Length: 277
Image (cartoon, rainbow, N blue to C red):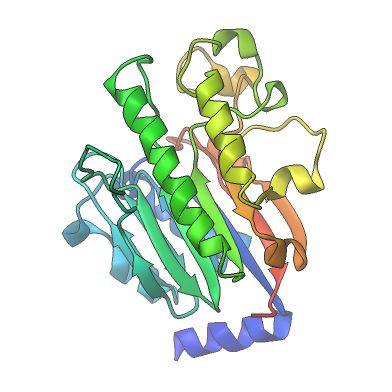
């Protein structure tokens, strides 16, 4: 009955709020996440770095609040999950390994679902440091695979949202001091080139669509007083297809959680769209 009530309430509001949040351990951050879900009136939440195996994911706590969940876990590292007030149809929890790829991939970084007839991909893109090196090679190959998969979904002309922690600094405006990141895997030319290639599939960075010249961040390191100095970077995105652009109402970054006690080093990003699908 709780889920039916939630569904009826949001039909009346005629909009959906979709958020992405790198929680940096769902076990540590669960009360904050649950409270924020209710306070922010988020309908669909994409989570990264849950850092727990599937057996330990707190699905019951989400269900008590009227959220269905799907998740892909990994002990101590990575992990992605989606919580939704609506039915979730899982499409894939594995970014394909294509013929030209020589490596296998057992890292929990990718979930593709359909909710309300919208393709939603929750991703935790590899960090890639130190670069150059095997971890950077993995990052770039992962991005190549993501581009190919995204193109396949995009070509169906179905609404599509890619959300998550991309570990990419796209432009100088997305960084407090770019000189500190010139040799970092998040800002290297090849990283940003692959990010442009992904967007050029036909996607739009929803935040930049609404705020083309605004400097705001979604991540602040725990070290060096980065939060207190607002020395941050914007690496958490919701990329949207033209079908979603047409119904986009608003976008934002909610910095409140980052200022609380024992926070994640990320903070949620969100979009609000008309409920048409």
